[in-house]
Length: 152
Length: 127
Image (cartoon, rainbow over all chains, first blue to last red):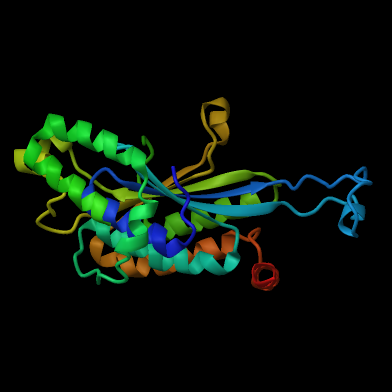
């Protein structure tokens, strides 16, 4: 379950996963709110003004996690952010592009191919279930699928 | 799944309310899911089963779901929304979708704060 450092990387891999398994892959967006623990004043060892911050409760913080998951192969791709500035772009452009891929619309332009560093980020865990599925479903189709995944 | 799908207008209206409800509490989550709306899998031809990466003949609708993450424990509080988006409606849908989400996700860090942090990070990296 890797978290990607950039949303672009996440999007690229997600598009690749969707192209490989358009019918079973889902994209989940989780917006969660967690209360911030008030910082205690007991830390006398640490210097600086921060440790003496007032105890009044800070407003709770939200975070956004985008997850692409394919239940058939068990591949999970994640991206997390806490920045409000990214919401519009993620929800509209990124999810929109994935929505198009889901719908099977092909006019999505192929942008930014990142073969070199993409290979590093590809999770190792996804290979095993892929191979297992391929063995059951017929060698030819499975082999092609695997290759496609590895490349992206 | 038992509840019917909403129209897009209704969906956005209720999604906005879902976010508003969340604003008043200090914890919790909202889950949004999108998936291809697949019809009965048994209807698929053998070719489609063997080569799922092949594209369908025509674009399929996708389904958008939203929940407040409540599970069995407190089922009475559970909110579940879903709507179906046809392929030709996608563009317009996502524009509205992003607007509603932007308006609802108020507890993310505002822009200026994140800028400050990025600056600090940069400083750290150079030193």
